[in-house]
Image 1: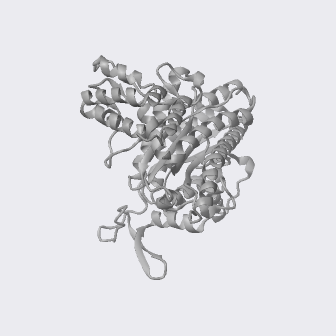
Image 2 (image 1 turned 90 degrees about the horizontal axis):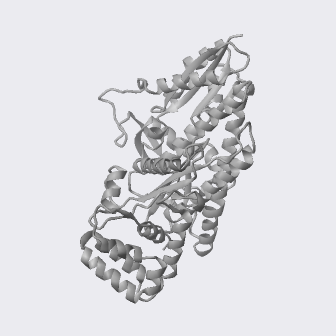
Image 3 (image 1 turned 45 degrees about the horizontal axis):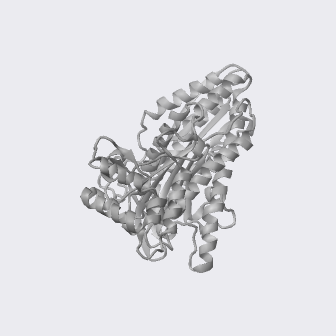
Length: 507
């Protein structure tokens, strides 16, 4: 009997979510994407008098869906669903494809063919439904066609329809994303960046992006080893992966964010919001915005928990007999910094971490994390920023020491572990209250390395004689040896700057 495999996915999720620098619109957009193939798709079905059973749903998650349908239903969805999405959420583009198959069981080859068609479709941009005439009023922030939007009784503003829907989602629709973290305290999740960073005068926050390692290879191996209906295997795999990722994120949230909120609430009753907002959570993907001082610990615990939870959840599921791992990137940015650049930077950092992890093992890369603190108001490539702020070629020092491996035993030669960095941070904290302020001296020393090598040598020698314990604890003799070499081509990595950055967020 002829059957249709239908697949759809949102293309340009990031451009839709991160088009704005307003947290409430970002959060609203993430809610829309999260609900698109759940509540919104169910609303669409009722609108065209279509009913799809749970057995027909192979997979549906934030941003994608796969269905097994008869020909008539497939035609209806293919024809009308893109119009439904485009008319309701301008700027949210949908890719869809179908594959006809005859077999009673859905095979891996059929699924691969569908994915191939979806990839091709993503490279074929759709004509926007809402183009507008030149004479029409435009949203000054986005350039889209503007509509009057009442905010309160006395204020009227003009925004494009996509922004309108995003604001409506955050204010009036159920927030399934934050409910995954706390069902009873949804109002505590911030809607503005100023609420997220409240209680910290510095205004630093962090974008954390985490992604699973070699998941495509794991799935291919799964389907190669097992015969029968691939749709049931994919459905079960997706459910287990979602559960493991959500549990890992919840555990990290409870241990880091919730504990910090409760402790701070005791000392300052005016604090109303969690210093945290989830943006994307589904499959093996996680993107959150979090106050800077909590980001490092949150990420560490999430990566550890992801390993533990996937091992528990999968067990020996259809030949997957080992834990899954993930890599993460953390972009530390100021509240006013363009948020979409922060997201792109976090993703780039995660890719760098993945590359280093795959160099250890291509089949089972270890978990690792890399971060960067943006210290300028303009944007440029990560490599250019690192060259300007972290590498001092005249001295032969590279302060870009990441990525950091979660487990000491799995780090590659020439790299550090999370424990290595945490030990340095603890030693910095131990010396914070000393009268002669050695931490401040160390910051001044690093600044001087960029300006005058001779002065830096003098400052380091004084530190060795005056701050002996501090000098020994931080193993600054390695830095001293490097300064004495005077070889520009002999670049050595140093962990000191990263430690100072993380220590500064907690101070």
